[in-house]
Image 1 (cartoon, one colour):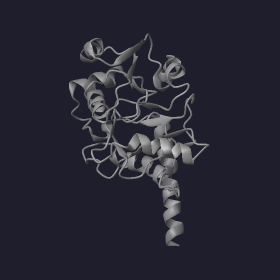
Image 2 (cartoon, rainbow, N blue to C red; image 1 turned 90 degrees about the horizontal axis):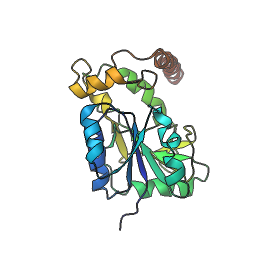
Image 3 (cartoon, one colour; image 1 turned 180 degrees about the vertical axis):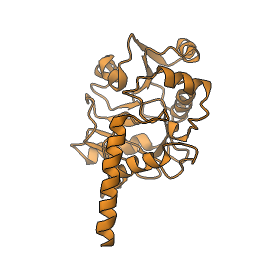
Image 4 (cartoon, rainbow, N blue to C red; image 1 turned 30 degrees about the vertical axis):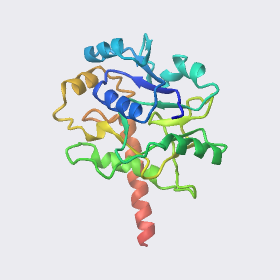
Length: 243
């Protein structure tokens, strides 16, 4: 018997990746899946939400990354159980074992002060056609530096696929990221933004640019500023190592 966890997926105008994530969850035996819809208008997704067998909660506004809490789902479903939250475009890697949920929960047992446990994201297979490839590698590399004795990495997690403690709030910093083979892929990092599909084009035109970072050809100024800082830190680190 597969242990069930409430799985909340924040949904907004993305269908292709959502179906891929749902397929993985169903294959892994998870059935208590909730789609928290942030006022989507993409017609194929709207139709899908009407007919899916999974639970759907409709928000009248785009509540952003805090939608699972603001919608009331977390207080209702996760007050006394471990629960999972993910964006629809984060998909466990094909080589990720199905016992990942048990591995995540066991990490909580061994780390009493941790708020959430989730996936590390692959950056070793990003395609050259993705315009932000080097920026993503610079950004994500910081989360692969602090490996702990238990095999996890100490690194913040935002809305990437992660398990939360019962009653947990929206916190990022006090988190663990899993090591291989427990990895996931952030699908937008594999897109060719110069040749967007109709779905991606619709999503980009209707997305909140303060929320969406890696989906457009131009990165937000806030992301660029952090990248400048990270590159400077990387240069200083290399000079110290070589000196």
